[in-house]
Image 1 (spheres, one colour):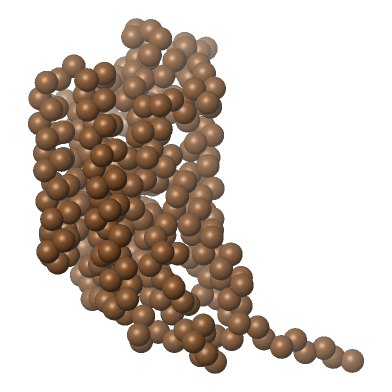
Image 2 (cartoon, helix red, strand yellow; image 1 turned 90 degrees about the vertical axis):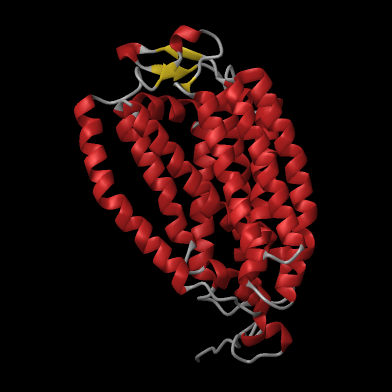
Length: 354
């Protein structure tokens, strides 16, 4: 196996990790208005993400960095074609991160509500737009040859909002919502756990319908590999297993199977794509592959050595973090100003001098 193929697989692994870990982050952020009814419960929901969310985003940074280093042409074409969606995702992630960090610094409940809206928007947009982006990569977009041998996008923003891509966006949106609900049932107790458990199954059924439509559409229209039907069937079985495990109260297994489904979905898309990294819908000769879009062999060799040294360290550290913060969280031990607590008054009286 050549190094270009190895790095294509490694990038798929990085995106799988990102979708699994940041996926429940997005789901929890979108579900907070539904599962948390007072300030104490909202703080409990956010506490489930507190030690984890910024570490989860590292997977996106590494996936982007690996793409830039291993396949610079892919990276350049992706940013030329998806500039507006990627900019919206970046702004959403910034807004979401600011809200996470500053929400607890202010005692005014009205201001905290604004931060809650920022968290919801910062979770909703990436959950939708990542699906739109990956669907367009698999479907292919019109490309053109530019000066100096570059391949650039030859279309507009609204060309990306085609029916297939929108189904892809809705699929990731509801997969992440379900994944977040399953995570909350695993990480919380009391009323938050009960509400999350109640909505996870309906969300999972909607996600299943959308995923079947999207995966079958992908297989029929854009895959020339009969073997990828295996991934479609495997994904369906894993998702059904997650819903069943959730229904019978096996929260840990439900989360594992939900995560495995997301890994399988990313693996399916990359398998359909291979050996392309960016198909051209207008002229196949302009398509980018792992060979004409990759860096030099020496660059890939250096990257491989660095990855072999540091990847295990990062994985061990992140696994240790999840182990340390593995216990369930309850809103019962968190004071809520909605219930009369004086620790976080809604308004502080102003003092005027002179």
